[in-house]
Structures are given as C-alpha cells and as structure tokens.
Length: 169
Length: 165
Image 1 (spheres, chains in turn purple, yellow):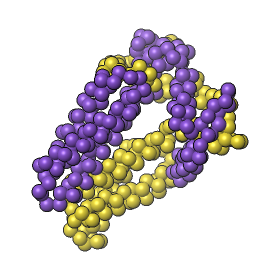
Image 2: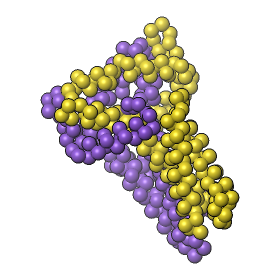
Image 3: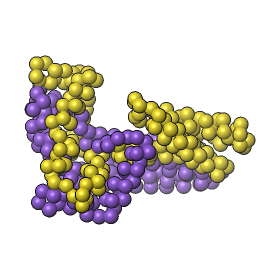
Image 4: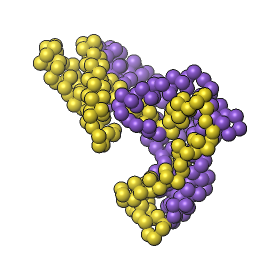
C-alpha cells in the first residue's frame, strides 16, 4: 500500500520537472517532448526508490507492477490536463473573450488564439500531420502520403463503426 | 498471487470492453468519459468481488495490487477513445482515405470544418453551461469562466505557452 502512496506523492515531480525543463530549454515546440522526458525521470526515480527501500519484501515484483501502473496512470492524467491547457478549444474561446472584455461571434473568429484567427487552428492541425509524414501538400491539394495513415484511417473507421460514434473530430 | 492479481486486472478490462461496446451500441443519449468511469467501476467490482470469490473460488488479491494496473489500462483506453472521437487530425486522415485518390483540396477540407459553425456551436454550448452570457450580440465571461481563465493564463505563463488552441 505504501508503495502506491509513494508513487502518488512523487507525482508532484511531473509538473515541477516539466516546468523546469521548459525553462531550461526555452525552445518553441518542445513542450510535448519535454513532458515525456519528465515522465521518464519521474518513473525512474520512483523505481529506484522502490528498489532501495522495498526490494526485500514479499512479492516485490507484484508491488513494482502496481507501482509502475500507478506512475503511468498519473503520467497519463497529467498528459490529459496539459493537453487541455495547451490545446483546449473552449478554453481558448473563453480566454479570448476575457482578454477582449467582450466579443461578438465574428470577433471570436478573428481573435481566436490571440488574434491568429480560427483558420490558424486547422492549419496547425494540418501542419502537425504533415510533420509526422502522414500527409503531403502540393499547392492546394492534400494527399495521404504513407501506409501508416491508411492503417490509422482503417482502424479509426472500424472502431467508430463498432461503437457507433459517428464521424467525430 | 502475481498471476491472480494481473489476471484480475486484464479480465476486468475485457469485461469492461464488453460492457462498453454493448452499452455504446444500445445507448442513444450521453456516452462520455463519466459513463466509461462508471462502467469501469462496475466491471472491476464484478470481477474482483463476485467472479473471483463466487465462481472461480480462489483467494482474492488485495485491491491495491490489481486496481492500479486495471485503472492504468482504463486511462490508456480513455486516451485512445477521446483521441479517436475528438481528434481533428484523425478526422482529416479519414476524409482523405475515403476520397478519390486519397486526396482533397483545401476548400473541401474547409467545407468539412466550417469555421463559423464550429465557433457558433461552441459559443452556444458555453452559454448553455453558464460559462458566458450574451448581451445583445456581444459575449461576456461569467464568474466561473473568469476564474478558470485566470488560472489558465497563469499556467500559460509558467509553461511558456504561446501557440495554444
């Protein structure tokens, strides 16, 4: 039981490490990579502590699995929270309204993401999948450029049809 | 014991997937993360307290031994579910896959994601949930939104986030 609590207490290291790494690197677009570095450091520290203090206890291997599962659970929870801060659509709209005191619907579209405009959001998503090599762009035409993208589309369509999720997105 | 605890975690997860698929295929209304959490609790309780002791008749491992792995699997699955359901990038890849020659014009993609509709539907949802209010044609933040935005902007500073949204 204590083993799990130690993982939970140590999880405070995730945001601290993440913020410290961002402050150290000061480079745009590194937030996600640095988050994973923070996860690796946190999980490593957690495992080392367990080996030092609990190695002799009965069923240590089982305790270690529980502990690793807890660390991974907390890391995934942090990932979700960070994603909401960094990419949340509703939060961005509300922030823009707050920063401008009040806005009409046209104003919300123009001021989206501190004045970048709502078209920027779609462009950002397209740039993201382009940088992963899943799609390519030739002037105004977007095309699937790898087998990986085809597998992703097949899996996604199959999954959505099983759960009757509709188009999503 | 190790096999017992791990197998309970994996078996609970299989039961969770079974209930999840059945419910999602039947239910027409709300189908979100809260329901996933509820199904996960029911699935784990069913396996842990009923199936193991009443049917399989083996000793039940302690909660803290089997629950972390099970909830880690649920958390992984929730990320997968939300990603599949909400991801704009995945939706674009799907649309490209279903189009002729796996290709589309930017205008066609813009038709799938009409910016105005996306913003208007989200604004009415935020209004409905009492995050913003409409005064004439202008939207204003309500207390709940103001408080959350202040925290969010503070976090943006700490994390040095410039390109959010």
